[in-house]
Amino acid sequence: MVLGWYVVPGARTISLRDRVVSGYWSPVGNRIVLAERAMMAGPLVRHEMLHALVRLPGHPRNEFLERCGGVVVCVDDCITAAGPPPVPSAGTPRVGSDALSLSVEVNPPLPDGATHGGYFTITVLAHDPADHAVVVELLPSGDAGPRRGITRWASVAPDARTAHRRRAAPSAARRSRRGVKPD
Image (cartoon, rainbow, N blue to C red; front, side, top):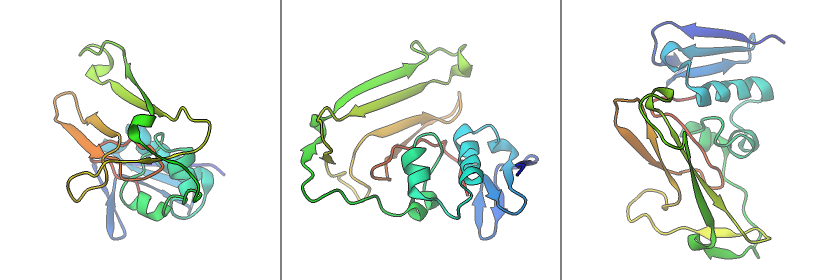
């Protein structure tokens, strides 16, 4: 079946039933509708494309947080709809975050205002050097938020502030642009 693409001119968001979103996929006619100001947000576009590919209602955890986590945006309602993460086996060892090996990649390696419009990515990779699964115990946050794990900083625009979000979806890495909400 052919996928139809639609853009709402000049829009930052779209009203969809009782919610405000930046884009959505409709199984009726297999259509993706995007707000014009969000149509270049790769993670959002890929999120809606994933809906069109899997053709399942909601946000199956396996697809949106596990197989495609970090490639498609999945925040707030998407995480809730995906359901809780799998429960590890009772005998799975628990370790502190210092048991992980961390590395950081910056792309481009020497960011400047002339390359990619000043945008750059920082990727933090956490590797479990053990030859078996482990559960990493995170330190308390000190407030009402989720425990502190790996956090991310994202530039919203070349002249804008930076945004900081704690990872709220256990077992899944995720990336998103501030102000862009999938359906």
